[in-house]
Length: 629
Image 1 (cartoon, rainbow, N blue to C red):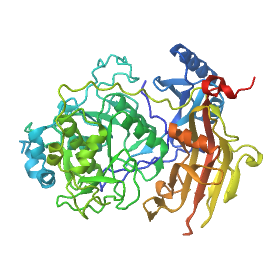
Image 2: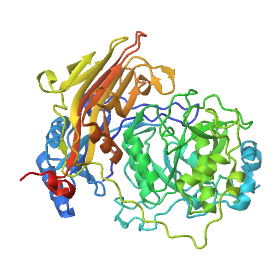
Image 3: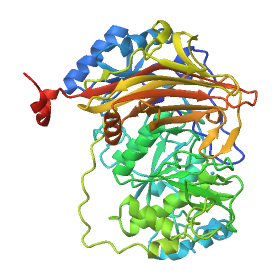
Image 4: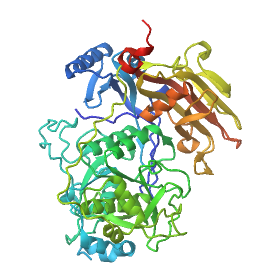
């Protein structure tokens, strides 16, 4: 049975960075009300509470399926997730029932997302030297053209694994026996011999668009094979990871793709995609990979502005701007404090899905040049950490623009020869790498919701303090929904006091939100790209911000009449818990505002849940002296 798209865990529309001539398409509203669109019709993703044994989990699933009369499409046992299918007209009722089930940590529809371009290779001398010569790649290739055991995961539209200039460098899962219908390596993906397609949820990461094959060729088209072009690191391996389906995918696919690439041995993750909204959920996925020594590289964006662009703007991602063959900034390239380095991104020729070659432009094309250089550095010395590789790339770049770092070129345009010359000689023998960190669970075991009336269904929603343009309204199929802003020049805020016990060991926040937008312009402020804004944060008792959870607004939603509902999910980090416990009673705050330009934006919030796991005091030995019999 074919598997379908996965769930949107933390919302962001991933803008297409395909090329200047190909605007991204957006999924149309499928007509379902409330937080159910757009999504794969009749499909839910259910996160189960942690169970001590697989047998217990099997029993949970069997009982749940019977209770709600659903069909199991897929199981992701590594994360305790089950993918269900049922009639679309029962989705709202089943979601409500499952959310109150003690065996279920979370449940959400399966949401949708959109796309965000001297060897003997005959096209090298005639088509590539104009922009590769400044990078001094030939001198770098005198040192190494890449090792096969260095793996670059391309999170994109898939890859034509049979392209003559790529097929010798496609990743093969060593623990998987092809086409036997068995998950031989136990990683949760059956027959993932050459990667995975998260958009269609199958083991065929073929390119249905062309962008991913183009990006892959820039990284690793074979060098000196008397064919086509030369990639930056023509000897390394490409891991195809598809997160789009004909230009549409889910944000959960991006997060799960990062985890998949990390857990299956990728050294470098290339993300030629991005969006303007900040999300702690996306940042958590980035941190998951960074903590496991994976280097992440992402496009700075093609808006031609200084608006912060994610995931490139996250601290542990190398953000890449685009230059032309004359080392000038290309007009479409974003710029700003998040740009680390720059690389060629104008009229770049590379492999294409039809087996041939094509020119594309964009920061999508600049990004794989940097990923390829990172692969060369690791080929020279595989013992380097991701932080060391990043430092080498940045410190050896050719400084362009104003002296030193600047927002247009970062530390400069990359220089492959200088980077390879700066790589320290690896120790002999190479040290045994440390075992990878175990996956971090998303939902805590024994999760207890500390919020009151997160569904806003109680009369007057007395648990929430409402200020300004904030009100509880009916919205679609939902009887109670928080409405913020929607009035020119006005703002609204809703907050609830929550207490994080000192015994808390894990906590997770989830909520649904919707943006109804009539204003599609940027604000001109890189840190506040939206004119009309939605902000979610933890604050202390005086209203002082402690933790920023989500910054988004009209600039993230460019669809007339607004996007359908989406869900946000974030597991609080240990440092978050320390900060919140020290603050005592804190506020979970939702804030929305509108500028006064005559084009208002409405923000809606619903199904808010803040779950904590806490040990009893009796299980904290150093606290026993305060327990009075």
